[in-house]
Length: 397
Ligand code: SF4
Image (cartoon, rainbow, N blue to C red; front, side, top):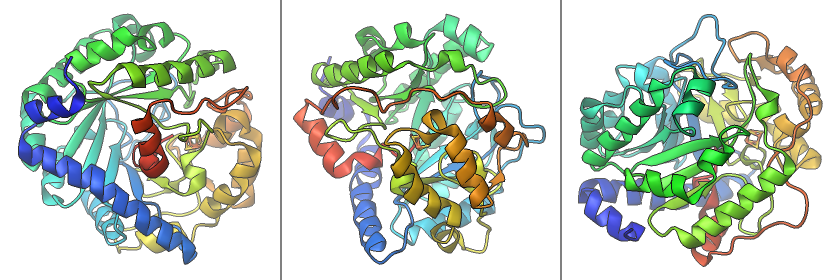
């Protein structure tokens, strides 16, 4: 297979490639520099903002934080506009757009076209990403779809309750390829998907279908049906880390992304570093999507910066969590997370009204903070990118 730079030159139109390089590359570097300067002045506003634009979804996946919402909300376009414009004024250029399923919002593709000086990573299950939608994304030129493909058809039937969804997600990947979009595939690794996705064949298969990057998540059981037995154990996490290191040396046709370890192999939590936060569909500002509680809400009045910077819960999260774990506090210290939220007066923002009960019944689980010596990056390019640039792609946890 061709090396990634050649693939990008051959598969992506120059206008889209330029927007990707400036929006997701140079723009991220500048955003990180401004973040560091702000931090020195005592103002914490992240360089990357992740926004869930709807709580609705056309799939019902086990263990997803977006399930079980009684009265799901959509973010009004004017609120998303205020978030993007306010963050843009702080030098942020790269936005993660999540849901639910973001493409359920008919206005979203036009929105991207109205914010061409920003770059958007669109987290989608691919069920609505047809040729017409891919064509609109190509016209705006500033969107990289990240299609979640979780194992094969059997995993879909089991985890997503819909075996046909697998074929649809693959069709979406084909549409993106036809339209020359810079495209990623995201896969969350759980006990039952491990054998399907932690293989060179999975990566090569996704690359052959058009993926330019493959992003591995470690399954975070959430929502009303968490499936704690699907969480990886310590040995599996360490083996996954080893696999990623090997694939980065082997596969030159795509970028292999993880959001869990720095260049020296030390675990980290992006929310605890202050490098990213998550704004939910109702404007609530959460540390990250599965930690569904907040003490502040952004509005349409351009208050995103002051709201985030002055949140006692977010500040306490940044100062307290590193003392508890280098990994994921939701997984390995759920009761301490509940106590922290209670101390700060944070409210349930899940839409289910049961987040704190769910938190109280969570067992202590392993996470990416695996035992044994850290496993440093062995590919010089990833090592360099993670050291100087890591958080640009590691903001989601
Ligand atoms: S490591 Fe856990 S708490 Fe931190 S951002 Fe990721 S999911 Fe959230």
